[in-house]
Image (tube, rainbow, N blue to C red; front, side):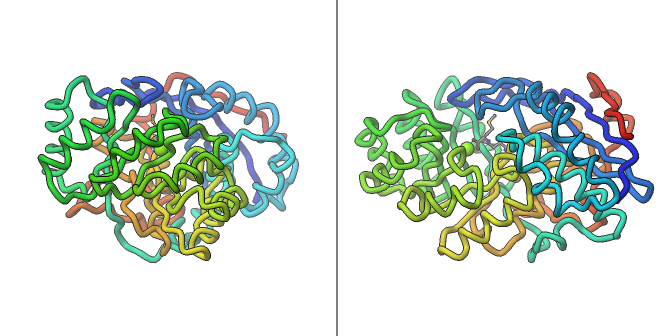
Length: 370
Ligand code: SMG
Ligand code: MG
């Protein structure tokens, strides 16, 4: 494929409500979008890095830097033999920066598929028309506030609730939600806020029959998760620790997780995300699709990924209005009976609205194409 232009665009989207996790509070989402232009079609990729390196070490600046200085030049150097399948291989020599790599690969893949008139879902093996939607609920100032928020989401039809937890906000909020709402699908996410020394405390979550506890320990403490899994009854799910299909195989082999949260940005792209899914499926490990507060562009790809057969748990694939009053795509993702629909049009199957995009844009950088 011949690439005639590549553009990096920074946008800012106000969140409908602040989102607090163990590493901080967000009131808006800064997003880096990658646009790849070819004579036949253009493609979009969304970089899920955050403004600060608190979820993982990447941030919007490091992503833009490595795209500009390393990733885009390497991809362009391939010339007309460029295909989406080659992008991962071409970028392999550059260490790290999975979120930046994933965004570029997605933009190339989207352009390729739009040119071929093929949907992203079909190309990666989606087998469902709709996927069940869970919702991730941030840490709140008080339990009544949390119960109100959860009540609202259940009212809208979300089929699973995930509570963000941290030391000081764990057993009591979980107890309150269980007592008030009964037998709902309920899980928690600690974003690395605990240590193995907290095992006895985390075992206090056992009576609440949670679907899983996500990433309680630091991302490099894979062995610690394996040990923790022997000390608590709640199934251990890894998010931050799983950075590739190989690391998934390793974590599974030592019993560090019985469930995996798959995020394409964290593993360097959707094609590697599919390989993580395949490894998990071969080992009988259920997976679900994580979220990084994506716009409609990244959400389209996530919803398609969540339609693969091994995604047997509801994902953090909520409707657009859970995050944004105005999404960047012409049609927002909406909840239909607790599900969101997998796009079927060419490529990502969604279109950015030029006016909305323009109004949200902070900067656009055109990268030179020889
Ligand atoms: O996209 O609905 C979403 C957010 C889901 O909780 C979510 N993501 O660790 O899983 C996670 C977090 C990472 C982002 S927190 C700002
Ligand atoms: Mg998580």
